[in-house]
Length: 360
Ligand SMILES: Nc1ncnc2c1ncn2[C@@H]1O[C@H](COP(=O)(O)OP(=O)(O)OP(=O)(O)O)[C@@H](O)[C@H]1O
Image 1 (tube, rainbow, N blue to C red):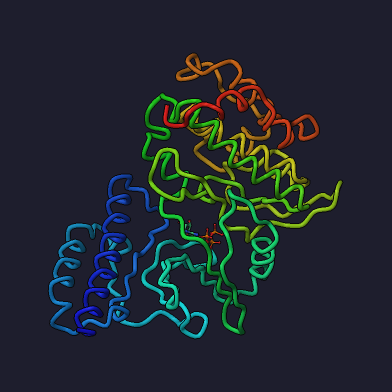
Image 2 (cartoon, rainbow, N blue to C red):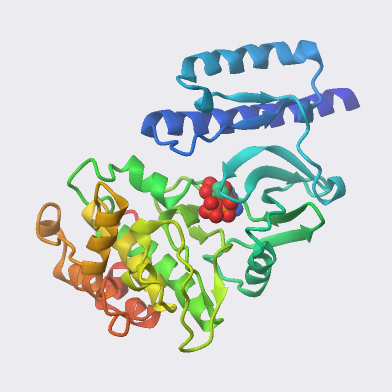
């Protein structure tokens, strides 16, 4: 009896893991957008299946592999080793769900409560000493649009962060699904764009009130809780965030150039730069493409510093004047004249549209 229950549970886990991988692979195939060459790893040993029981799933996985594997980096990897234990085995790492420059994020299960979470595993890296800051930011800033911290641990080898699991993909993927840079259409209706912008700028406001600048505000760092159109949006990844005092200036330049404010490129900036990055996201949602785009990094930087954004050609004639006004005030080259988070949240376009049903 016990055995039957156990294998039923294992089967459920396996089905879940397979679905997750298949979904991820389909997304990647559909958008063809895995420039980072991410590998999706499922730890089959975790399921404690006997060789015989694994035969079926293995066949299925390897056929998917053959179908999918156009180049080596996109291949599905079947892992035969258990990932490193986290929290002395308090959590089970099921499979990888994301990977950034510094950390690997796993789908994990709390063995006691059986609830699912995301666990970010950051190997010790002398070039990235701020993992502890990331934990303190998550512990101090509790907000409905900020992914919540469940557990954290720092040891001599790594930093481990267990947090709320968001399964709706990131904002950049969602924009890609809706034709970012492919169609000359707005990616979202104005009410949906307003709901998304409100969530983002609420996060900026909360951070700035806590004296923390996000610095790495871009659509990859906002994830949806689920796949619904009106899903809640949550900020993740605070590895580059930094505490600031009023008037303090910074010079460190993050990598994500498309979202950087002109003053960040000049390496002399303060928290106003977060609003510029949110303005770039608003522009993309309404305009269907990046506001600044160039073949090489040098011309891209020149465009950003000059700050001209097209609000005339398609789809802009169909976008409301009020929305265009907000875009202009967020993408203001002069940081001292740029809207603050408070001003964005009180802009008539946001107030009116964020009240509307987001599925409209
Ligand atoms: N709470 C979460 N729920 C679901 N997926 C998540 C969660 N946190 C992170 N991810 C996924 O893992 C990926 C990597 O996470 P994250 O951006 O925090 O790592 P990083 O190493 O700090 O990245 P970066 O290169 O941007 O510094 C994200 O892009 C996202 O797809």
